[in-house]
Figure (cartoon, rainbow, N blue to C red):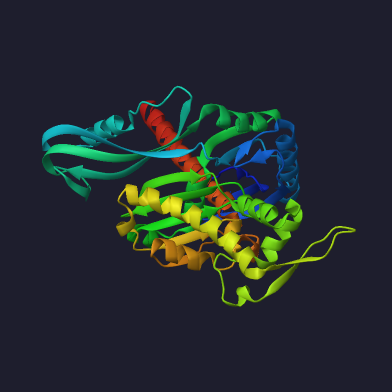
Length: 398
């Protein structure tokens, strides 16, 4: 089955990236090009300057086109933002007898029928588990029962915030194949089937936002966005030490630590000083405390959400960190402390191309968006093929 290249666009707070993927003969996926540009005009995953975002996206697109030697006409657009929310919903219908596929289709329609404010738009309706007479986690077709239920996670966001990013793509004369939630893309790239079966929490630590996706019994049980990211840590340091943002960012990269060390209480750091300013120093432990408190707050907000949803005890596979924030020293140790679960760093899996350059946590969203696009395109192609086979049969051909 021949397929056109799949192109994913990730418009983040810190970076804008374009990933080009092509199908291999064995059915796998190969990343053939990446375009990367510093992001401007974005804050907390949301746009505040249209022209700046357009310029950054165009730069990344042109890089990818040159590297892949193709013209990009359509993209799968991955997006985040604190306005994106996950809402679990359950549908239930009476069956009183053997359950058929028609019953399953019916209960799914019921579960997906949610009332949202007029300014909200559904991004994904993700099927979770089915239940028969209160017994959950079953494959219901062929079973006998009185009631059939289906759990669905509705991921939705503010229409205006999402359509503004679509308008950026349209302004560059491109089409949007699908809108995708960045957190789901990261999970697609970085998690294994075994981790999902065990139950796992993926946290994507971005520049302006932190996305999270929780799996329980191989199904997505919750997802959402915290409007806090690495830029907030930088801003905390800038205020705490009275530094320009660029110098606070450099300080974070060089000395940032999510845990406060004993050695940090005695070690002092030289702070950047401008012309004519008196040289200053600060305790390393003060820097570590600032970073620690912000990261602990971020993880704590996610933990509180999962505790409210009664999901923490289902996360036997632990926690996986992706995104640029996964590089922060001792971020995994802090996550282990907050969640009481083992934690590791996740990188894209099950793709080839560009050698080891792909195996980094900040590429999880972009690579995952290509994987989501590839899966969607294959399904559409297979459905189209089935339709043409039926038409051929009707007319006595094929």
